[in-house]
Image (cartoon, rainbow, N blue to C red; front, side, top):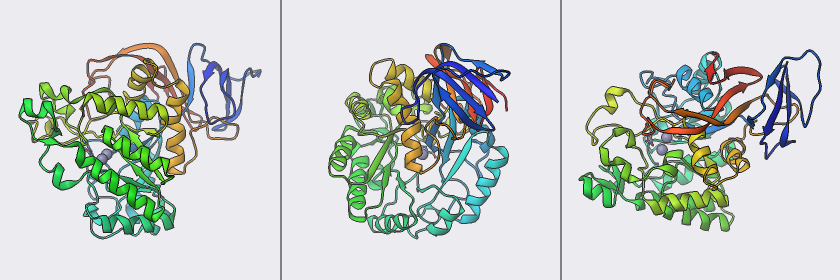
Length: 428
Ligand code: DOR
Ligand code: ZN
Ligand code: ZN
């Protein structure tokens, strides 16, 4: 038993918000309310802290099986706990890709043993992510896949994508689309615009994303299958999404903390941790993405946590792999840059990082309510910390936010009633 006392509870989908107490018993929330009086129960004093439902990241690369030099279930879920996440969905672009039921089962078993937060596998849309043959979606769903994605690459063929959506709809799982038109994006390493010209790097135009966003919207309309658009990065994508939602087409979308806070100008020092797909875009894109979040056009903030080894990232910009790590900095960045600057309220931030992610994946969580699993995070809005490579527990140190001093950090993470981080220290 544990009694969390005196927190400011931010719980937009739950039973109680406001200053109050939370009683945890046998891994579950036993009571939540303005003031709970209990004798002999250990108390966690949370005055001055905010309590959120545990954050859920729908887009994480844990790199198992096969790429354990980049990240493991153990290291990646510890990074998640440090960031205030109590659940993550892990992408299937591994070695081998997660395209068979036995691989989903293997991942779940390993996560059960080694994960410190909940791990929900995402399975491939196509076999080997080759874009041709659709996977056995019913088997994959039965084995525990919560969604389908070929993330890391698009499904180039519209015909294949349409059939995949028909099957996914039948098995009741959403499709998460990495929107990239391959012939336009090929060879590009950053956003096509002023900075790519100035730096002499090959660009990826905004249209490479928008063409595929438009295609997925049309296919969602035709099939009625829910499509979730990963890591939107351009103002044009936002316009298309706005159009689709106004027509009741079943699409949702996510944006990453890095696409909300950095532009292509960050590439100027050739730091390969700024090399990410989709690329960092322009000022107008950032403005549109923030506006869309505030309006509820964009539903979710997801990290696209993409760890790589130091050797892989320490290459010429053209050769380094795409991706940056985000689990440990997401909440602090979003608090400072979105809540701090009046773009989102704390309750809206919790909707984007916990409530809507749970809804998309059809999983428990995202709300603090009696009887629910005790997955929650305590957040100190006044804590100041500088991001350093040494402070990161992820194997990947590839983040452009090294050296940033941020105000507002998760301090305590609780998964199923178990303290996994307390006062910033991992206990697992
Ligand atoms: O930057 C990225 N990294 N974008 C992707 O689509 C894939 C990811 C990865 O797996 O490294
Ligand atoms: Zn992607
Ligand atoms: Zn990804």
